[in-house]
Length: 234
Figure 1 (cartoon, one colour):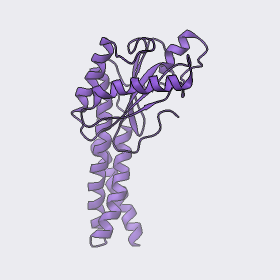
Figure 2 (cartoon, rainbow, N blue to C red):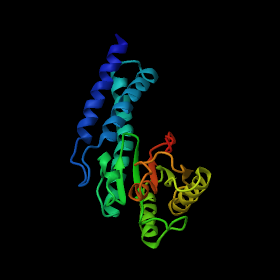
Figure 3 (cartoon, rainbow, N blue to C red):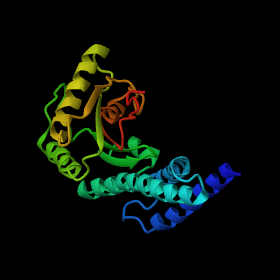
Figure 4 (cartoon, one colour):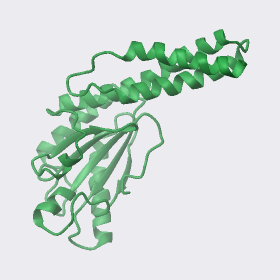
């Protein structure tokens, strides 16, 4: 009976907080999926904690659920807010269309998933052939991201470099790592980002033409709310 009350209290807390966060989003993206997920998870965890550490009744569970949902929803809102703010500052919008990566005109794509925000920087704006030195226009864009990260000190940043298949795998792995490090140096506002060179793994398009190889040459910046980062090369 006590367990049922705890679950009911957690559900109530989630619904109550869901109402608080079910507000119009920013211009570029209004889904706020992370907010909803964070609030729901936080409510369940908070309700259980409130029940176990309080007087083991529904009231304690509700209080714990509300606090947990507020904290969990706040994390979600922060990530959604970052996606929209980054997109605005970079002169674009949040674009979750998987086909966007196949459009050669999309040299900068901001997208988001349930666990991270991703900013893809791609040729021709980034690096000259075989170089790890950022071109001036790209440096300006990356610095813009770095300035905004100062507003989100809890965000965990990861940077991954990708090449095409011209040259050996090891050569491209080192080149992609150097390119990721170049970008990471400009983003080390709240600590140095985690970097990884992916060589020509995880190609967006088959490396069988010049246009396709250009799609694959890119640097991706990942913004996480915690250290549970996935492998960008897979």
